[in-house]
Image 1 (tube, one colour):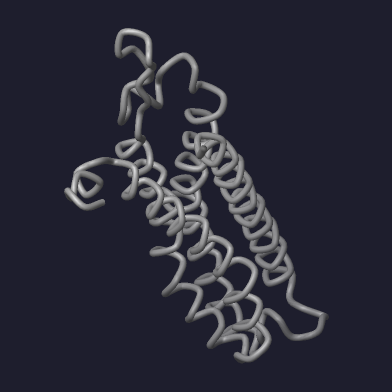
Image 2 (image 1 turned 180 degrees about the vertical axis):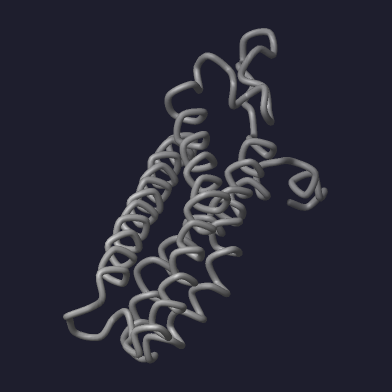
Length: 186
């Protein structure tokens, strides 16, 4: 690193972006959310999640695109041929399964959570709060609940479950890409 050339290559930015993505996913999913749920009252937990999820899903959608932009290609010892850097390298035939598929999956899943599932969840949550006022009872209180609240709780459970599954798919895709990335280390 004496000549500073590494600063002008894609590799360190790619590795730092990957670490940021995986670290954010693991920390939020397996540590932050669980600890927050255990120590916060349900309304405060919901407020925290509403504040965190746009940034979290934004990271899940944006960083795979950054990884594609910063993909460090490789040169073959034969006539300078190899895999190009950036998007061209991600799209290279040799990278379809180990690079394009996991990065594309992570990007699409993060974007789906951000632009569809999060707004749907927030919409259902707002309807549940309105119904709580009508019923005089919290959505998470023990049953019985009104017919309307029972339906809203079911909708919320379904959309939340789908979002959790999509989040898990994003994490798995990120880990799969990490195995591909680590296979390039010598």
